[in-house]
Length: 436
Image (cartoon, rainbow, N blue to C red; front, top):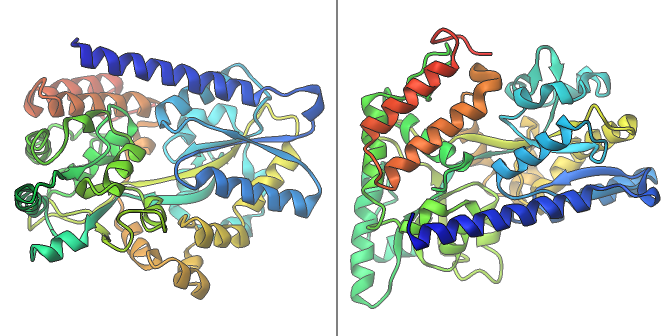
């Protein structure tokens, strides 16, 4: 490992330790706050602030008290911390904010929310989200907000050089190279495309979008349980994007998470960016250098016969089995996922609700112009193979993102890397298609 790689490793370890101790210290209950409801919330963009506002409204309504615990930004670090807390049977946290792919991993530690939330209320949510969060008949998480990967672009630069919005990955590459070259003649240094390229869950999302956008690219593991990763379309697109590293994409992208990408794009240093919808209001804030200069669209197709797609992401709220305040915690969950609160979040923070009727609400549509495009994209979103791989999903995803990262970092070709990942996944499966 070179000096640069060692430096990144040390920084990553130190940040992880800092995040762990900060979370651990924040979540310890004292004798003074034993009756508080403790809820974890993420800190990406406006997420933490919007969560605090919602909790404050519940406190005002009920006269009860809750404490918001900041959770690490990285999904890998967050899952590890949550698993440690839950495995220890800790009652320090009552409500966990969980990723859409975690219900099957954490099910044995979570309460069945059907015991607290009326069935008529549950029918108001997108049925696929309720289905996703139901494991062995138990509803272990309530949908809170949804996300889908989008392509952000500098519409001012596309207009300046008379380039159309790219419809395919090939067109994106061509446009990026043209604009980079022309801007360099003016003494301006700019990258073509940034994405979440660190070896973590975010890379699984990005790479699945690349692959699934191509005809016959597949979804890593199909609904039948068959491992489909090692196919020509998947190999071709990942090899292609590997060739972008150092040309239209900075080498540093191999360590980028979502906020790293936003920082580069928002400072005017990139033409295209893949990111979640949370970035839109931040990019258009009054202090943003690119406010009014950007556009957003579904991710490009994989060739003319491909499809626009984006990985379905999002976060849910779960009730710990070890909570000593289950009734009040469940009431807070129901409040935070209610129609009124979801509407407020949609308008205040740009968070996309898990209720379809809010996509037709005039107030929400007027305050959040992305609602219509989001509703269309949601119906074509790619699903990560968490349901079919069940408790093995974390291992499958890690095998996938490590395989892709090896290709992007030029350690091996996609042909060789995917062959090894396919063997690992088939080993994790009992009989090639059976998972548990």
